[in-house]
Length: 151
Image (cartoon, rainbow, N blue to C red):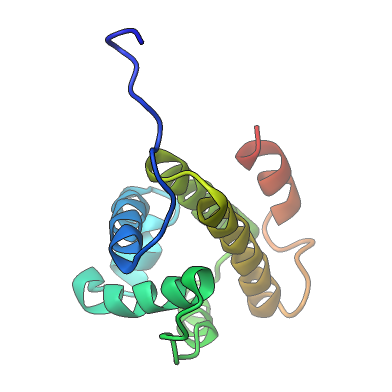
């Protein structure tokens, strides 16, 4: 190995602690992102420390099958969309940052499922906030996912 190369992720997502680290990395990037950051910082005014346990519950339920999430994940996104509409471009950027955070920290079957689940969630949220369609919802999600995110 050359000195300027760093080894890739060594392990898969296996615990709540793994999810906490992943979510902190992702939200650190998302809050700073010029496209989607304002949704977290200005529109939602998200207090990450207060909200992170709920987000972790969601991902722990989705990926580790714990059943710890008992809230409505759509409701806060719908309320946010009412305040400032979210487009395919926003959801595409969310997926791009999510995939980069996952790829930068973990590797394995659960990590792959996290990326797939993130994209499914983004498509579903886009459909539900845009009245059931994704075409014409700000540039189209499929090109962002197929071209930008997988290249």
